[in-house]
Amino acid sequence: MDKTRIHIFDTTLRDGEQVPGCKLNKTQKLLLAEQLELLGVDIIEAGFPISSPGDFEAVKAIAERAGDVTICALSRAVERDIERAAEAVAGARRPRIHTGIGTSDSHIKYKFQSTREKVKERAVAAVKFAKQFVEDVEFYAEDAGRTDNAFLAEICSAVIKAGATVLNIPDTTGYCLPNEYGSKIKYLTEHVEGIDKAILSTHCHNDLGLATANSIEGVINGARQIECTINGLGERAGNTSLEECVMILKQHPYLGFDTGINTKMLNPISRLVSQEMGMPVQPNKAIVGANAFAHSSGIHQDGVIKKRETYEIIDPVDVGIDKSSIVLTARSGRAALAYRLKEIGHNITKMELDEVYKRFLDLADRQKEVVESDLHQLMEQSESLG
Ligand code: KIV
Ligand code: ZN
Image (cartoon, rainbow, N blue to C red; front, side, top):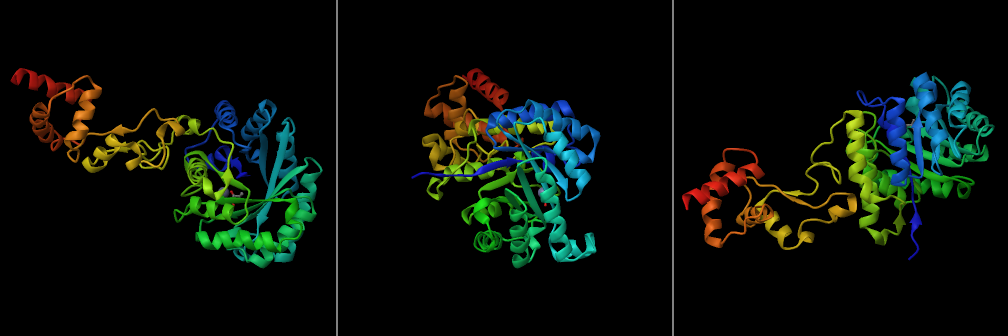
């Protein structure tokens, strides 16, 4: 079956970099952009050029050095913002301007003290203005997750007419349930005039832990671009995690979607982003957390040692990890202990294992983890006990 290509729009350098403490300098942004291109993302949102001279310079440098990847810059629906974004991405082979405005009644009333009609006019004017600089203009309807579907379809139809090539439907506040977000995308595929001329994009925040589920539901219902970040970084509780979306689509091939991502780079790039941003990855994070391929309970360890697939749905090698790890704790069994001892060169008999296992448990009950140096000591003791 021919798979439908889903575009991966990486916003680690923009939404991800907005996280307090995650700010990057130009050199760091260039390094990460280079790696993101090697990873195979289709679009890099490199920054928000109007926000600071430093960010303008970083986006400009990324645009000038990029290969075939699309380089995108964010702007509000404000002419000065759009001009600055245009200037920053001008050197890219494939430049894109991302412009937009809040479309929910809450944003219209409290942020803009405006009306739906006036917001629609501003959206259309912004897209038309951006079109003077680049062919590829993405429009974001901020807080689309809480925007009335009929008005959302109306504004999307108007911006397509003005030349928008991509329609970003952000669940800015992370409020939607997966079926709600999926239905919203489906509604747009059915009610937006000229939708065949544009791509629908997901951009989901994780305030209720639903960002990935919502993005996938969006794709199932007609979105063809996912906006996401490495390690799920982004405002507040974060954005959609790139590695999760990519692996969900890969591990569920019957869904019929494909991304161009080199999955073997997922763990190395996760570590690089974490290091450059100074933001640790939670150990239980899917795909890239330190424990994502670590097994510590005796029941699981016994299964994995017999056949990896018993407790793993992803081959760690596919995501850039050499192999799964067997962590020794007081919950580990004999099979795990024997396995780890064998790894360090001790092939012991069943009787020897029974003896060393008793002393292992005694130690494991006193500390959180039994590490390799402890194993050497346990074996030295065994030898001296004769
Ligand atoms: O979450 C959001 O709505 C955004 C837009 C600026 C695209 O990040
Ligand atoms: Zn966002």
